[in-house]
Image (tube, rainbow, N blue to C red):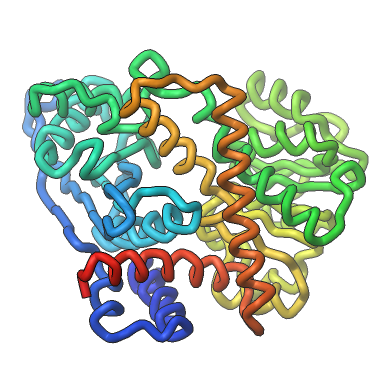
Length: 414
């Protein structure tokens, strides 16, 4: 039986609420979304029939600012997944000090079975239906699983037509031509490297003598590898859905990228040992970056992890039981909603520029990203070192939930 993600999110919150000794009314209000919208999108398919798709938007909390969070198009999307992700977005925005709340959206559909025209119709219908609930000062969606900058462009157009106003700040992750930013593509992977750099300083690991393994060669893993190399870190293993490649002498990022682009897979990469994804996780290295799927580090393999740092590029790659084992084994984990927060921080920069009419240079964008994530890392680290017998994930939750709880109290909502 699969774990309900929203029940998991509530359990995590309940632990923090006990640590912070939150009062009953505050706990009750922070355990659920403030607003959950559920509706059905109906479009005429390319072949003439009517197609129906269940759709959701979870607006979890806006005590710190407008709701913020992606929209997923996925055949296995569920209402509770969207609720859970909106809770985690709330904590992620709070943790990084952004003036934003948390939200999430989803449409149950299989993009691989739909034409571009049908995807356009679904996107437009979603934005049109939610027009009164969205906006630069209400709720700002962004791309997520199986959605992209083109999806946001379609949604922006539908939203602006419906509201009869120009509002580029209503959506982020847009094409550069419509107010997006060139730094956004690499922001999540770069953020993984920024937070890991600070962890290496804390643990006194010299980047120029360090080794890293990147599990997953999508957007996050790819750009994490690129920026790790700039720090002087040697990448000794990569993986994609076809399997893993390993060479203790190092595999250059450019060589892996070129091979992947030419062959669409890392399989049979020359001068490297072929491993399974699970075997790759257990190789000796300084930094392990799970940047693919959730629940890849579990109680069954946690004792075999030989990394000093786990930098969670993916959402939820480590189970709760594995967390406990790794903490006892003195493995330093940078939790997902700190480690991969570069994406939402970059989205915040886009939103801020759209609303002010500015355009930042790439250098300013990346410098600001570095500053925000470095500050967030040290805030969590201070809590981790001050509180006894808690891990970095628990410290991150304590920082984030306290910020939202304090904002709720200041507003007089409880």
